Length: 102
Image 1 (cartoon, rainbow, N blue to C red):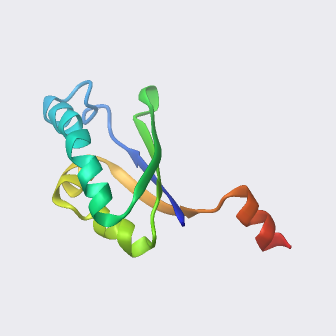
Image 2: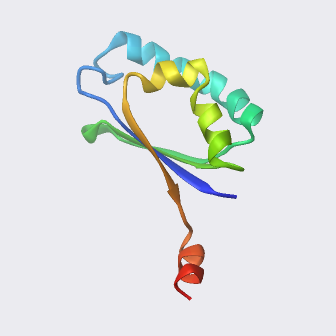
């Protein structure tokens, strides 16, 4: 299954540590996330935050870029991502990269 990286950054002003609206939204999102992921057939591999850099990296496996796009367009995701600058990248495993080189 293809692997996608969602790389998001927010400003210090929009950081959940400094912004009550963003804090409430960030705390509410995980409650809905599992259902949205299941609905679109995407599986979260992991999610990491680099707090001092206001950087978040989410890794997903999805059946297609279309499935991930539909997931990211859910109202809860759009609302949360509006506070961030995000990019989505298609990634390869090391084994896939090696096969490509051969």
